[in-house]
Image (tube, rainbow, N blue to C red; front, top):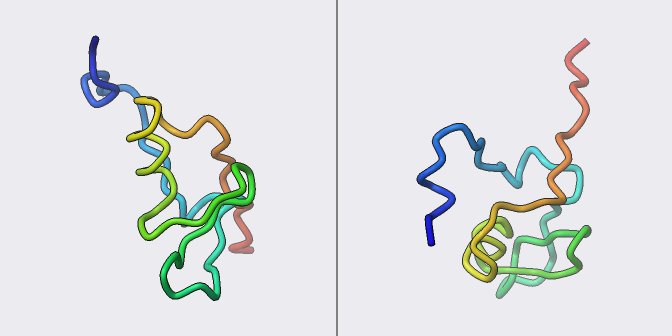
Length: 67
């Protein structure tokens, strides 16, 4: 079984750039993902990768509002 990191053409999602990412009020679990409905101590994409061996499939980039 190959690692997703072996495929160099895959772009690793950055949770902070995703519309589903949010910062919670829970100091024990400060990072949240609305799409997958969970909170984490780490960035959510790391938990997704660890649990199923694939990068996050719900990543949606935030709109670029630099106008």
